[in-house]
Image 1: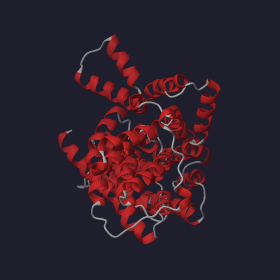
Image 2 (image 1 turned 180 degrees about the vertical axis):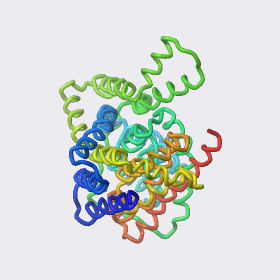
Image 3 (image 1 turned 30 degrees about the vertical axis):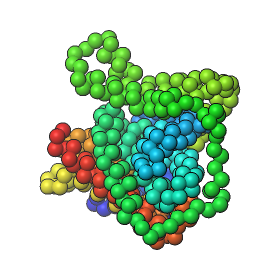
Length: 438
């Protein structure tokens, strides 16, 4: 019976979001009440579980996502993202243009939400394609593969960071393993896949083909752009590697661990960016603070959706559904990593949003980590991979790609959907291979 209630809850979530176009946060709360009531929870305990779930989830994430939005806005407004892209294109040359946009997408995608990175980089892709005479899909799809992988696999992006919190996974290790898996995934889903697409010609609509391109003297230098953009990743990874190879306790080790904490790493990065991308370039503090304030307002709904997913996770735990599912799957011969990936894939196909799919799957798959002893970091990446699978007409990313590249639905399915599915499958393969050695 508890399993049937979960299935009905997911179906209700799908109907509310896809059929009735209800806001995902409201839909999550309705599903929380639905599952709690039919599981026989007392009404006041349902409300309490929702509050606890939201609080536990957002307590860690608000700071990271808020600071991440600020860093992304500073990188965008200063022209650092454009400098990185144009510099890499110049360095790689036309012959290796795909690798240039792949690296640019990966670097810019780390501090920025997917939709922000998409809007910023796509006009540059259009310009590159026009200047080189290369097919637009050939240039653009590898860059989008990079953005998609960073969105689904790597902290400090919302879903992987939130799922890591749910599973008590080490964010640094998740990031390290995620990068290891991301590299071959991007290569296969980006440059290699696009070489198989011969007959699809994309032509950007006029309204998307007039990008505001900053002049050279209006952008920060390449070195400072790269350093500032990658600083949070450098701090987190250096701290993780330090703790892996240095045993014992000391004041210096405690300091390194403190600096590598995702919250502190993001705080340091924002402070550095305010100087390197703002004050040092003549911008005044009120202007920078106004930009930072605007950036935070853009993540409000993302935070609410994540809070709703955290509430559903807590309802599943408090009502006993998680224990029931854990006992049910305990004797299964299928790897918990594959099961978690499948759950995320099914929800992704039904709901569309990768973030919603990942967070919902995490709540259901929570007992798999607790009962199997599998690496929680790999579970985060398995769910992240499944959450990117089979993007189709109920996914906002699908329509962004279709409209910006001026494609038919059929052409979008044969390019975007296959690329996203390749990312999901390659991610799972990478997780299973890493699991052999961990």
